[in-house]
Image (tube, rainbow, N blue to C red; front, side):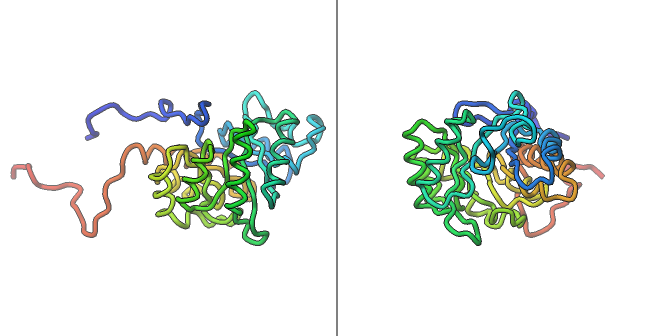
Length: 267
């Protein structure tokens, strides 16, 4: 028998981010696809409404033909420029302004990389860039490590969300430190979007079951043997994980508990 009360529905639970409402809690990237046509098909299968575009890796002067931007339907998808490839606050700030001046958006997924091998963020430079860009009128979504203290500092600096990594970028290792993500969720009030490390559907579901507000991924879809099928799988995983989180899982127990107890049954 089901519980008493009003049943939870995904359609009644949109993601609100910086005053904007999104039906989908899956954000997807546009890199690493073998063709733009395959990218477009995967984006559509994902059901996402937000797609990230690396500003310094696209020709902003071209929006037709074989340009990446020509394959993104801006009536359906919101473009979220990112500062991928930046290794200093100054560079990231410059790239964010370049994307806005080119008409992409005043939103930015802010990345300031601190190490070329691991692609871990330089959090000091990230915090500096966040403060500057917020003052410059940007909606800043910073990619950061899974440190609750830094997450709070970024929120205090005006970030519209925090985007902690689940694992190193492109590693596909899944959520490596769920405890820290749970602490971040208790520490900040802005949305928490897991960014990096998701390799398969179960990884996305775990992030959502922890209570994260959304998941952003690129390599997990683009690098799959069948990116379009994986995009749909990730869509369903994010929805399933969110539904499970809102439904409320049973507590974990050390010992068995009969699913068909005899208490209250006459013999």
